[in-house]
Image (cartoon, rainbow, N blue to C red; front, side):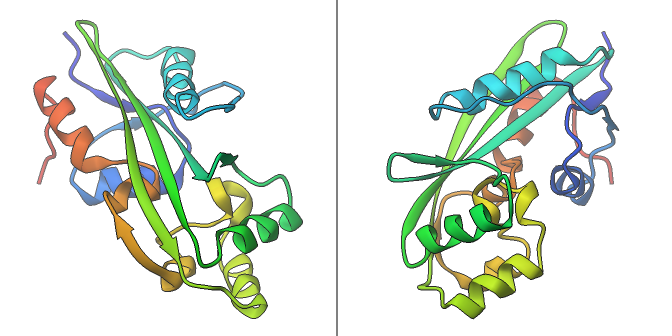
Length: 184
């Protein structure tokens, strides 16, 4: 039984969180097209990522989406769409969902974690500040809470790390049952 952890993601944020909490792991970038039409699709995308790689060990993958009302805000296609997303999120509550999928030889662990986030009302110059000081095209909703956008988050209900893209406080318990613990 191989107890090596493999992260099926190229996300620098997911890599940084796992390292921060002392996990030893290998990174393998998945080869999938994400198609997100409804909330449950973030779990399906995480599963597809895990199954797309060939590696021996315990595979962890995640997929994160932002939902405002009934509209799913994925990764913006361009700067203008990122700006539109931030204007829509301004002064409102929205939901961040991360689906995670953990595959071992013996079993599968999977979950969707929801976090509520409220942005302060954003002026145009604040939206520009967020866009210029982050990589909005690489993040669901066009923002990263761990970057300057975090200045404008008035309230959060749920997991902060879920908004970053890897709900580690949930994943920890599932990895523990599979014999994967942080090393310090």
